Image (cartoon, rainbow, N blue to C red):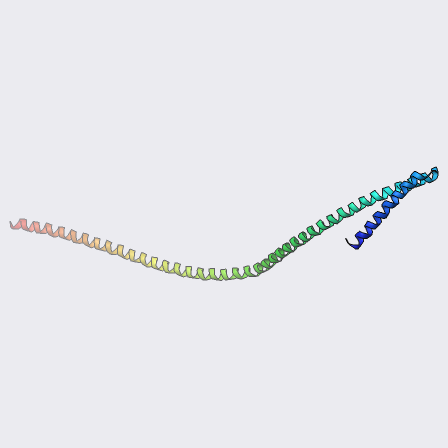
Amino acid sequence: MGETESVMQNRRDTDRRAALDISQMILNEDDPKQRAFLLALHSIEESSRTGNAALLSRIESNEKRGDRFEVSMVEVIKKMETQVDLINKAKGAGWVTSKLVPVLLFVLSVAVGFVNKEVGAVQAAILIQSNSESALRTELVQAINNSNIVDLRLAARMDLLDERCKRLEGVHK
């Protein structure tokens, strides 16, 4: 038992003795005025004793609420610290992103420029090759047409020669 508890216990003991004494005095008192005074005093003493008990129970419940409040405040503070850490990380990520995105865009635009340059060169090479292939095709078609024309001329000449030969043979027969 602590020092304050022993003081409270002693006070309670003396209060009980005083209450017993007042009750005894009320029974022993013959004077109505004194008896009324003792009754009022006893009533005040009883109400203060029950009031003290109620006050002590309220103090106890308030202390328990205070303890629960402290525990919940510690939890709230921990959650706030966690949220502040997350916010700071998000701010840091935002800063990095704000600095990194323009650099990446620049690098990508340069890369796209190089790619476009290379694609342009490849397109030009393909165009040149297709033009040269087209020219070759045209030359080939012309050569085939020329050979067809030559073949037709030769066939016509051979036909002509065959006719002359037949005429000449007809004359010699």
